[in-house]
Length: 353
Image 1 (cartoon, rainbow, N blue to C red):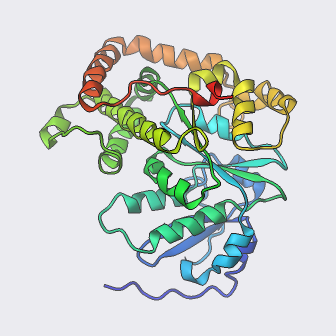
Image 2: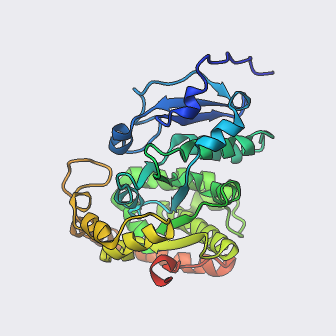
């Protein structure tokens, strides 16, 4: 059945000219975007720019991609770079720390990218989706202030969009943030049923979009423990990011572990700022590294939270689930050897000059 025609919004140019209207959702059936109006303060305060946290924001009617002037979109576009990540690796903290007034703004997990990721994960891909993603990236890149660079942190469920993003925006660079396998498993088990459910849901998406070079039957998958599923998720991402880094090289992609970030945040911010060509001097990054952003929970404003608290939580999870985690890590080494997946990623952000 053909989709119903969409009404043409009379004020559609405002969705291009006004950067407070951000792309919110993409509908591949109608090749249309819905916009949400979010000002700068609301962007900063929202945990993520998705349906969970923008439910009360004003929304546009659906706007067909073809109704948006490509020339106007390109003219309004600005510089944009990206943070992709393995989850539970301080990427939200990094995005907040890289938001510097009149220099850069962090966009935390825009839900519209999840829309594209879900579309690319099914077999019914539409011919206009790649062009629509390009338009969306340009719209996300619009600065709120002159000279501002947008730093977009993608949800990890949108990981497989990385090559399309770099193809569509050849000026963009990507910082891949990750935790090591042990830290990832600790974070999953620390969250109890929610973490274990997250691992299984993420595996379901990655099995189609970034699978490992290893065949698992339905019976095999049923026999996996929750932490084995989580380890599979980590290995999928590690293998994918390693391939992307090998292909694009350090000029386009750098990597950073959460451990290195937290052990020396000022240096990590300075190097990330230089990589993203942000015009802020060393003193600015040093001030941010000892400022309030690093003294509160990245996702819960006002809640006191420090690096020591973060490490203590992971250590407690390791203590409570020690046997399960040790067994899973041993099992992961065997799986990695079978499919050639890496068990570590290099910190090229910190090591590159």
